[in-house]
Length: 110
Image (cartoon, rainbow, N blue to C red; front, side, top):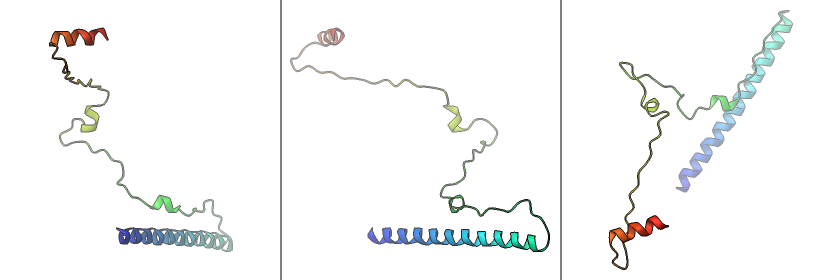
């Protein structure tokens, strides 16, 4: 387990350092493009900001809901808005060998 934790921590560190390096390089490219635009006399109305490292990291698949074949509703949509009341059973026994009717009366009184 310890080895896996170390490897995972190392992977995260290398990933973060690579993201930082990519962000720095994107800034350099944006600055270089801005300077080249000034030197050639072109005016640039838009200089792309470097993308953030967090936007690049995707750990989960995109949220897409595909329609089932042949139309119809998705399984997740079928139960929307419906509340189902759950029923529970309670079994009560008596220590003093009381009858079922006596137990029901006692429960109703409380």
